Amino acid sequence: MKARFLMCPPHHFGVSYSINPWMDFNVGQVSAALAMRQWDALHASLRQFADVQLLQPEPGLPDMVFTSNAGLVLDGRAIPAHFLHAERQGEHAHFEHWFRAHGFEIASLPGEIAFEGAGDALYDRSRRCLWVAYGNRTRAATSVLLRGALAIQTVPLRLVDPCFFNLDTCFCPLDDGWLLWYPPALDAAARSEVERRVPAERRIAVSEEDARDFACNAICVAGNVLLNRASAPLQRALRLAGFRVIQLPLGEFIKAGGAAKCLTLRLDESRVDAPSLARAA
Image 1 (tube, rainbow, N blue to C red):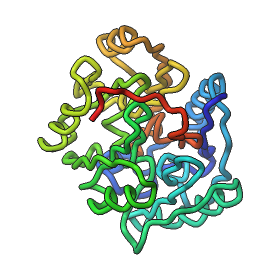
Image 2: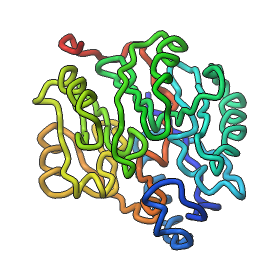
Image 3: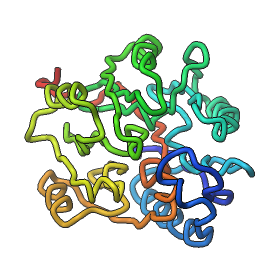
Image 4: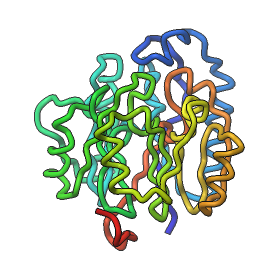
C-alpha cells in the first residue's frame, strides 16, 4: 500500500513577516513563480511513490504551505497544531476542518499549549516512539501530553539553535532504523539520549553546510530520500545505507525556514505491523 501525504499548493506563499532567522532578511524576496515550480517538482516526485492529497490554501496565511505543522497523525488520529506565533494561528481552524472532513479522529491537547505538529513530533517506525522537540516552538510538557493522548513512548529533545526551530529541520528518522541528524542543534542531554537509543552505525550526522541546506528536512518513502540538496559525502553515506537520493531545489521555501519535509504531512503512520528493532531501548 502506498504512503499517503498532505500538501498545500503555494498560491499564497511568500515571506511577509518574520518569525524565524531564515525569514529575517527575506521579507518580500520570494519569487512566486519559482516557488510554484519548485513545489510542483516536489509534488510530482512524491507522487511517484505515494498518494498525495491537497489542502486548499487560504489568502493571508502564507505558511499554510508547510503542512508538516498542521498536526500529528498516527493510527488514524490527528492532533492539530496550536501555533506559538500569532501569524500562523489562523491556520489551525483550516487544518482541523480538513482532518475532520477526511475522517480523522481528533485528539486535542489540553489548554493552549504550543505544539507545532509533525514539525516537532516525529514518529520513528523502527523504534515505535515519538521524538518530541521543545525549546523553540513546542513546549516541554507536550512530550508528556502526547504520551498520554496516544499511549506511545515519547522521547523529549531540547533544541538550542534558533535556526533549527523545529525538530524536522535537524532530525529525520529514516527507514530500517537509520537516523539523519545535525547534533549541534540539540543540547548535550538530548544528544546523549539519541546516542543511547540509536546505534552509532545507524546514525548519519550531517555537516553544518548540509544542515543549512536543510538536508535533514527530508522525506523518506519507499527507499527514497527526497531533499533540497546533499553534499557528495552525504549522498555517499545515504547510498551506503541503501537509500536513493533525490535532490529537489527548494530555495524559495528555505527563505521561510522550510524544505521538503516541511511541505508535507504523512497521513498513514501506524503502529500496526510496523517494523521494530529489538535493540532499540
